[in-house]
Length: 375
Image (cartoon, rainbow, N blue to C red; front, side, top):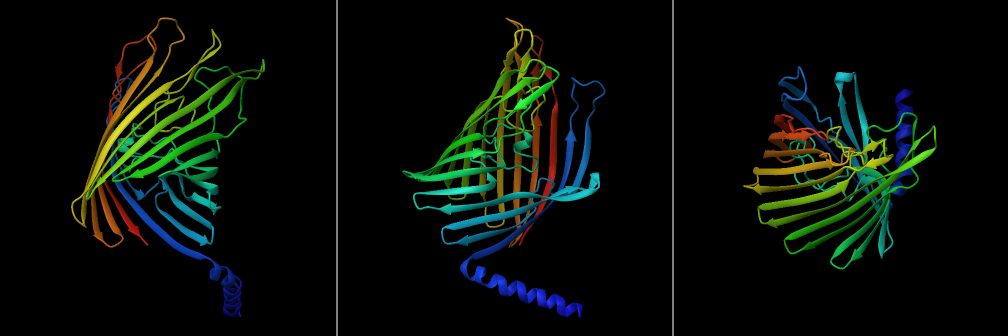
């Protein structure tokens, strides 16, 4: 009886899905990434009692790179649904997160997307296993994936893109008043252009967000504006690919840019009741060489720096500089089976509080491998 009931449900699903499957093209895919890394957190000379520490990470990739998805195509409509695995065994749970859910309609003169997917401001140079080249953010990548309404237009030899995006969770400037409130009244906006010319691909993007921070006791508000402009160039010459990128922006921590020190943020000057905007600039380069069908090598280096004025007139500003580099070896063991070996260094270099002398912030390193099966 139980088996018959299950069979009846299966037949009903096939009967109802038949017309949809006949009119649409659906393809499924998946990847499983397993990481084995040693993380060495270096001693921070600015922290009393800090020491060198090395730990092993042995788990499914916790950044959601392990994934399963489906792509859809039906006439002018296309779409993608993709879920990623997030490891959290240390916290007693494993979870799944949404990577992509979107549909896009082709109107001929332009394409309109509604959903959750990569932003145009996502421009990694080399995607290291620890969030970029040694976890530094010198690359031209600011965004990741977000919910949006996006339009794509053919513009000469390239493509022009405009998007209204779910704004990042706004943050209060350092030292802002107690009794706080944030008013977000507009989405984040992006505009980008992507063009391929001969062996070169050029990607350009600008992104902007603004919100108000409010002192609730007086109902007075201040505007916090974040923006970034960035570009990336990729050159391909047979087995060699070379990359270069840079970005410049303001108040990027409030913009959601992760992996940066807490000091890399705007601050509030209570005496003069003004926002002290933080500015950042970064660049990076990288290259990947395919030796044969089994082996490839890649390397990259980048730097990034931040500066914020002091609330005291004539005092030296807050400054912080970082750099990072990585080397990756790619091994194709068999079809759809890869192992990546990587070594990377994050040099926190030095920082300087407003009006103080520079201090050395130490280095972090990681090395190990990532095992990848595609199905």
